[in-house]
Length: 102
Image 1 (cartoon, rainbow, N blue to C red):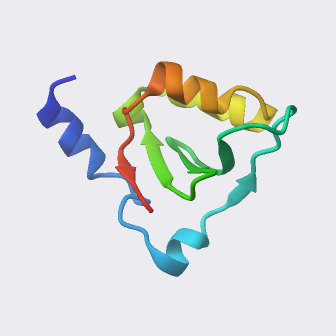
Image 2 (image 1 turned 60 degrees about the vertical axis):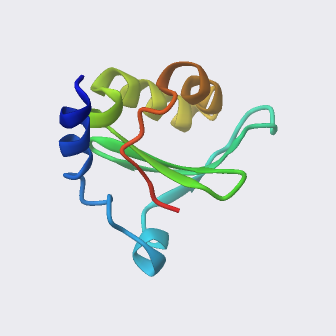
């Protein structure tokens, strides 16, 4: 996807500009890893996106437009299963996030 298409796609998600109380009000779920050693602390799901809180406190938004529907589906499945989300992000999704929210 061309850089200009990514930039315009990144600006359309309603979670994109959240901060403060609005960001904390998202439907966060604790990431329940089966091994206990994940780089992911929590996640929030939307129909077309997933926001991820990493153990360092940073929050990233991944959307269908930024990472692709297939990646978002795999991330959603991994998040709900509590297995492999951090690995999936670091190996496959990489920097295809829509925004760093925090």
